[in-house]
Image (cartoon, rainbow, N blue to C red; front, side, top):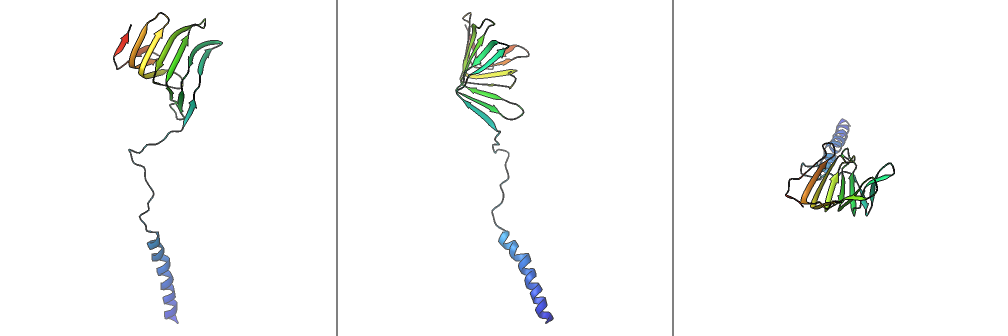
Length: 151
């Protein structure tokens, strides 16, 4: 009788300890992300739009990209493809046309970076061409790491 009870407990112990472990041990493991894996930031995408900036009732600029992407992270980066920007004076007349294949700015428009066939023309006829240009609002400076043609 005692042997039967010991065998039953031994049987229960073996099946409850070793069998689930053998069945549960498979090569299927959860995937851990690696350093070179791409992580995606949530992004808003707007297709064929017109962005306008007003100072009171005065239109300051108008942007007409085919696609606009805005990241939903702390940078609030905005990408426009292509850039077709028109800047206006206080009378509503066009002062500058800005064209490029792509452009990126911060949510507050404090820094703008344009790249790909950048073309700028002001109302006096001054033309600026380059493969890339940047503009910093605080310093009011324009620059580029590429060749710039001014005529």
